[in-house]
Each structure stands twice: as structure tokens, then as C-alpha cells.
Length: 173
Image (cartoon, rainbow, N blue to C red; front, side, top):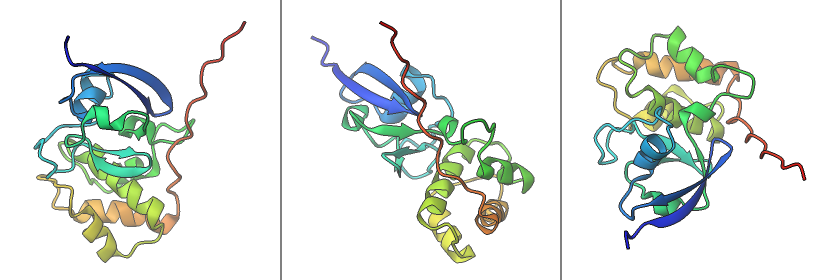
């Protein structure tokens, strides 16, 4: 007996059934089992924020969460953030416009955290953005460009909610 546990996850609107080891992190399940490689692993201690995804609409550090504990949950990764039909979420475009990324390693986690902030508070102050984003570490940009990108989207009111789930495939019978 391997100790694996069968779980069900809905990721970016698609249903997935997996058998996971009890110690497998949600980040590893997303990346290695399901191919959602936009979720990055940095410190693997929940300190850097590179692994930030949404679990049932709230930001979580997927390196700290066991995949088995996410059984039955709705997970949104950076790949599922853009609204249907768009190639980028407004935050992705703003990060590019304001040069809020360099190596890009932290960017998916930064964008997921910022999108969560804008869903909870569509018009944050600059101080609120700085405070909220303080849990995500970037070693390249110095943060000013990141804050400008988030403020640009907040001021424009352009941040849509996460994309609607993809419809389930229908069976013809």
C-alpha cells in the first residue's frame, strides 16, 4: 500500500482527479502532476509568496498547503486569472507596462496576491497596496514599479474577477 489518497480539484475551471502522497504540497501537485507551471516554488517555507494561488477565492501559499487538504476545492493559478477571451489579466498588462518584473520568478505570485487585494478592495490606497504586497518578495525590482502597476489597475477600475470556470465537457448520449 502506497498511502496515496485520491483527491478531486477544480483548477482554473477544469476538474482533475489525482492520487497524491500525503506529504505532497499543493504547489507540487499543480506543477508536477497537472502541469500548471506558472505556480513557482521559491523558498518552500511560505516566506516568499512565489507560490501564491487562490483556494476557493482566497490567496494561499501553495508550498505550505498539502494537496490532500485541498480536496474538493476550487484552485485558481496564474494561468486561469485572465478573463475569457483575453490573453492577459489587466494586472499582467500593467506589470509589463510599468516594468514591474525583471526575472519574472516572483511575478505570478505577486499578480495573484494583487488580484486578491483588488477583489477585496477595488480602490486601495498606495499604503494598503504596499502593506498587502509586503508578504511577497522580489529580489529584482525594488517594489516601486510593482506598486505603480497595482495602483494603475486600481485607479482604472480595470481588474475583472478571475475568469469564469470553463464549462464541463458535455457527454452526448
